[in-house]
Image (tube, rainbow, N blue to C red):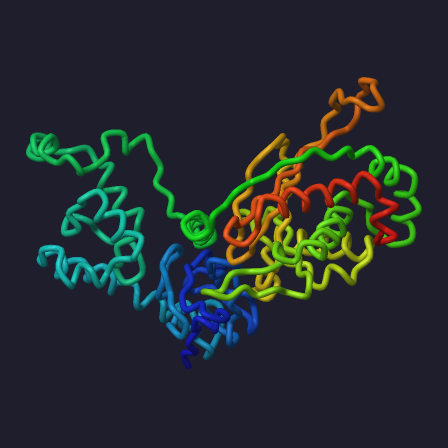
Length: 407
């Protein structure tokens, strides 16, 4: 009995994904609920479990193919596992060998188009590859990206060579020394959102510097006791989240968003914290940050970071933030202008801490200084409020007792 392995619902407003990785090959035995294939969306990765025990008898889409909700990814032969299940797959193997023959006679028409992956089609169009000359190596004779690249990198025959100069947009001269890799759904979505932010918001960035000495002294004094009691280290991020919440309360337009001709003021503080995941930067959200103490903030941020690196974040973890904090300092950044995370109005950029000479009471002293940046939507936030927001951040960090007492 064949059981269909279908693309499951992917979340609100998400209708398609990309096949990221097959954990099994055709003919392999599978167990019920075993993660069989990984799907990638523009936000998260999703493990699709086997709906039944048996063997994987058919794979309909290769890694890199686009799939839509409800499409059949493959078939599981639930009548048996292991060797017995491998026989139907082996019997079906000769079929793909015959598939390319009739398609080759068609001049890159509907027959060819139907047996190629979306990635292969894109690469072929960009490099003007004659698909009638490409032999498919995929399931059912499908033409894959590697097949197209193989044809593209194949040395030209004498008959083909003279035609090259007449093709200004043809094969790349250095194609053999290059590698073409499909943009991941996450990177593609990040690119789209960055362009969206730059084209829809009037972004402006203001800067300030923060003396980190008092917070560093506080951490040094209490970190051991803090870790012993709460089971987590006392980091800088919890202080900046608390400082951001205090500043957002003082300047609510930076915790708002523009919706058409309306402004939505949000009386809650869901702070997005940018972290590095396995596939790039993601921004999980710390919910109700104003109600969490330093220990809970550190635990929450740590847990979200761990889940991001292991692809365990869900869609709900990434939606609905009201303000974002990004810390380029962990990579050594001295200063940057962060880009807004639409539809948010502000984003705070943290940077590395460097000992710098500064003036204190008429004397030049060396202090641990961090530059901070606030990028904001000038359509809603004036320069005065943006500057005062950063000053409030500075005051809270430089006088952490004031932050803890909320004064």
